[in-house]
Length: 170
Image (cartoon, rainbow, N blue to C red):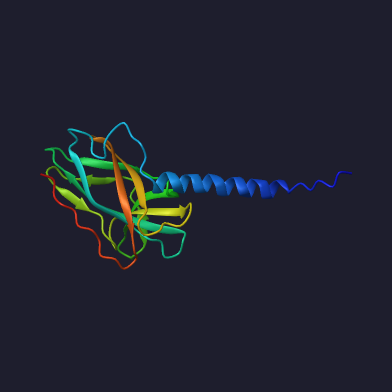
């Protein structure tokens, strides 16, 4: 006998899961190279004032921003993705105060805007892959029915820090 000790397969799988999770956090927390800018040239959608609150519980947090539609036609935010967590979705509070998903998406009126704010509509990031520290960034890909994909980079701010303001598009 050579005395070689092999770790149980469950320990190896747990280590692999941690590595995969950390890779997702790094992808979500570091700006990614992209063939298109954050707001594609000629896009009718402009996003401003984006931010993510540091997580109070290490499990989930929320993201906020203002979406401006500069076109004469309403558009719908149909999907959101990010590498920061295992479950990303658009949520709002119902009349009883419970958070509910917005499966039908979010309509941005023609020549109008919608602001995601605490206690109202927000991007819920659940099953965080790791801590989100103040000063990091989280990348979101927003998919719109008409405008297509828009990439957004949101800084992580403290729980009690004032929210950044969004300048209206010119």
